Length: 241
Image (cartoon, rainbow, N blue to C red; front, side, top):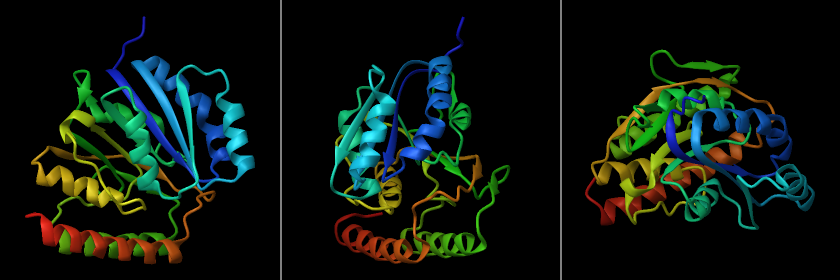
């Protein structure tokens, strides 16, 4: 008899040419969900991917009644997550990077008494009892600078805004949705939770850097800084945070 840890869950996986990562991880992810979640679905969101990559994912999920594959031309992780939430049929959302640098089993830590431990639960690589393995030093440095910028601009206590493993309850956010399409959408999501006085909880996770990541440190860091100041401008003018 299965001992389910939560009643329902929609797993969102944004993908930009990440079919190889998904192929390598899909069956272990599905086995975990089957054993741990009473009702689940997996939504893979390909946006900005090549036709061959899209076809590979279509083949992977063919005839799988628990999995949807959404395809869009527009790029952006934030855009992908928003589209996935719109299609989700369950209230509990978990989203993960396609390389699963944080293993799906870490979700065990996010739940208690058959529900998420908070309205927004954030996997963290930067708090006590977390593990950050194999990350290049340049990534750690840029991450530290980014965190300092975010905390100083927004007075956010979260120590790791960018770990790609987070869960939240849709109904807690009501009609509020992030507007950022790129990587900095996480910061806006946290701001939205803060503005609504939702409970935010960081959970230590084991993170193992994957060399197959498609993130460009230089180009994407510039985009993220620009995005942060765009969020600052928008919320400074219109919100009291």
